[in-house]
Image (cartoon, rainbow, N blue to C red):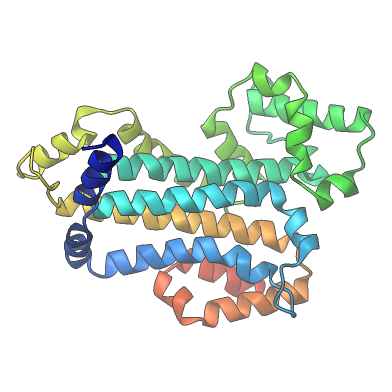
Length: 304
């Protein structure tokens, strides 16, 4: 048998329709709300960027292009994450979910760095020697000395990557995710995520990191032992508790993503149009099924 046929056969066995269906039956409404939250995360930018003629509003699209390039990958990684978990591949599901969250965070970060009002206001909660604070300050200097017009950069935010690509600062430091979360929280990206949104997002990120770091109790075999299931089955056993934990984290990660999207869009769409789109969104049955209560409250307050 050819190698590609063997891998195709293994894939069909590992990601079997019956396995996903059984997981959905075990999860019940938690799966429905998680899947719908993922759909909302993926589709909200499409809905808000649509012009009255049904085309994409190129001006708004370009102004948030730094965010969108990450959003595309984040949505794909989230879908793969959900598919793995529903197939009994929990470690892969949690690991991909952390990747999706990182993509959301980076998309929001670089979108903000393309805007002067954010770039020139580094977080007071970051130490002067923090790599992100240094990068933010350095970027402001480079853009000013290069005489790059803020209006052009903000009108086509993806250009921020061209500026970074040619600068040594991109390679000098590794940005700490905790610092990125704190900076975004201080810029108001995570409104309505609680009294201390930075700690809330950070808690989810570090919980997901336990799976990435392959601690034995977070491997699929370790989880099966904890939940009294067979370790080495032909089809991975459905672990009810692990599945429930995953869907809860997944739903929350998608809500973080939706709130980040809405904050990015609100800064680029004229108020009246944004309010019209927001009203349509909260009234849609699909959004109601997603159970994105914090995002719903954020939209409700914007409309009053």
